[in-house]
Image (tube, rainbow, N blue to C red):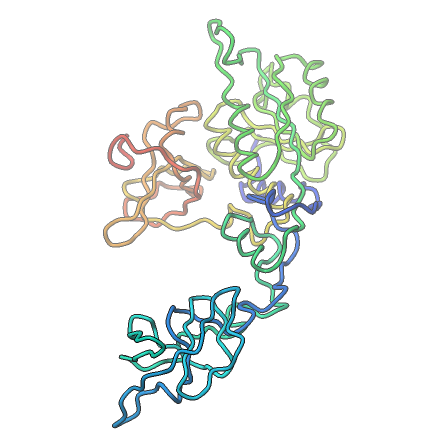
Length: 415
């Protein structure tokens, strides 16, 4: 069971993803969804010349400070507010009170800020010259027809605000792909039940479901099955509408590892194992034509390998822009040694931070193992170690953001 390289497994997961489907929804339902079309500005922004500051709009020729000239007193002839512009024209020696965001009146081409003036009845005394710098020109931010949000990006709150400002109230989004999740093993118990000797609570099912939702997919719970081939097959048959099946457990080569025995091998994209630690027994095949990813049964392996492989699958299934998340690894400096594994890529739970010199640093969490679940609470990244020797302290390492961490109980890497 030599397996494929991790990069090859990541690539295979991207290739078995379905082509993205789209759905058009209101912006109110678009948070966290992937944009499936370019969004262009439907109008210039701003639509007219507007004031960038509260003050008075006037003619630069009347309120500029030339050599040997004193600032004039201007005559107030009206006001311009957002939604209620001044209808007339500013003439020589005149000014219009103006609010931030209000349209610049005809004839005016400069603004003197409010703090640099005094109002005396219908006259405005200037203490500083007016300037055109406080005028935002039409289309200065965006011109009509310009693409402001490209397809493949994820809509967060600021980008939803931008989409609305562009004039869009409904947008095309990648349809949420459905993934069937099945937990195998006679020792796996519900949190509502009593544990028999040797039983464990099911953490893999909730972990995978949460990971899929965070990636933008919709998990469908196929339940838990004991080590029985017929029960496994019946559960898998319930995933007929899924774009992917994910199972945990049964992926090794023992007597009761029924996932490995029952997985179809007819798909063009498949692998029997991955040269990675933890999570090496992971395998890819199919069930009745649906891609099937078999993950190990140990929670840390599920979290680590699941993050990488499902991240690649969801990225492709949603049509997200740019390379797969695993290809966007960042660089950090090792704060202490980070263990290497001969002939395998190592993915260790790690903690990252920025030191006083502004450098990103990483420390491998201690006491790691594929079943040591407590380490999941403290990690905020995976540190990726190529096959071979240990990375020494001070070496450069690649890191992949993993999860938002809880506060560390001690110094980084010394929990």
